[in-house]
Length: 252
Image (tube, rainbow, N blue to C red):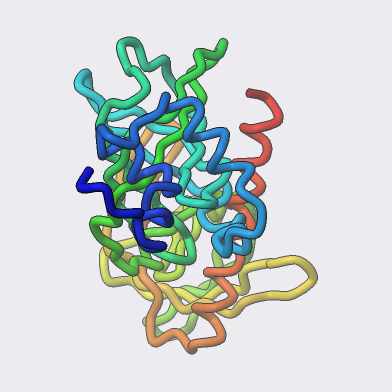
């Protein structure tokens, strides 16, 4: 120090937990930084407490990637539940996290481990985010299991044919389903997907298939969907993902 009093900007930076963890002259224990961060009253980031909430994530560790989900992202701290143990991971270590958020897309972060707690089915991890590496809007990447039975109409031929299909999962761009009849790639069918008390009209084109012991599964993409149809599917996927994440959290 040169004897000068620190300016306001220096004081503000010194209060930032990420700054304290990355600058030795201000370094405290990672646990203390995390506690201070989560209790700092009036921080504007608190209004973003629901950012990434229950979104799936992957933590990059020296032994490989570990999946999990986000419980909270606020005040610069990303709190997660990992599906597996994280042996050897210590507070203060650098770490990478990728979050697949149904709303914000794929978000990549670099940060420092603030706290690690072993649990019966994995681990709880707090990461102080140092850098927002990338954000890619990929609404189409969001997909969720959604099993239901409905009647579809197979287009083409002299007259449309009806068949009963079992929907397996849906996304904002298509669906996977099983059908009792063999369908060729390029076949087009129309069906009403039950969503709550409504039916969402879908026109699908088969683009691939896979044969399993329980039958043939078809992957299909939407044909000329309206914005209303895409939004309805996306809202459905978002709701399903949140329900599945909450169920996993309750049984953690």
